[in-house]
Length: 171
Image 1: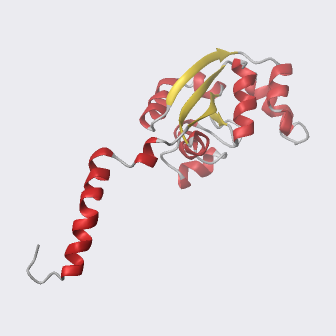
Image 2 (image 1 turned 90 degrees about the vertical axis):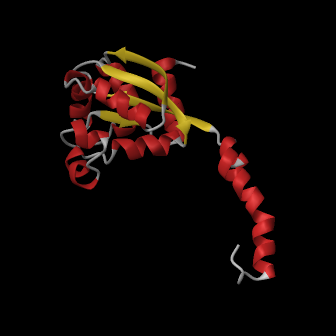
Image 3 (image 1 turned 30 degrees about the vertical axis):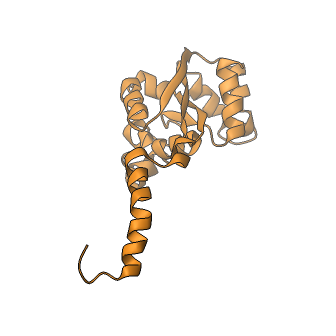
């Protein structure tokens, strides 16, 4: 240490430096105890037909997610209406059902700490046109077209994630 350092400053450094070095080398104990969370990710028909599946999966893995389960399914009108029941009273509901049943979807269970918020951050805004300017590195900017054909779906809450995972994968 420099000769001009006060005894109080030296005592402070001597007291905290070993603990800070241990945290730096081995990580913070509370960091290791972070619980993982699961969310549903769905690649919609335009993502599958546009051959974006592998690119999206690479982005998912690069962002620190683990893909726990996946299944490719073709939704019919009844199942699609059930999945999107919360939107049933909205003007776009009919076109949403037509779109989501236009081809297969790939449903995945993603896992990591803070998975719901992190997946929503990775996919970007609902309207892919806005995503292209405000979140150009997002999945929706990469492959979405508009607010309906936006390539991917993500659960918006722990309750939605549990319901949507159960919808595709059971308990």
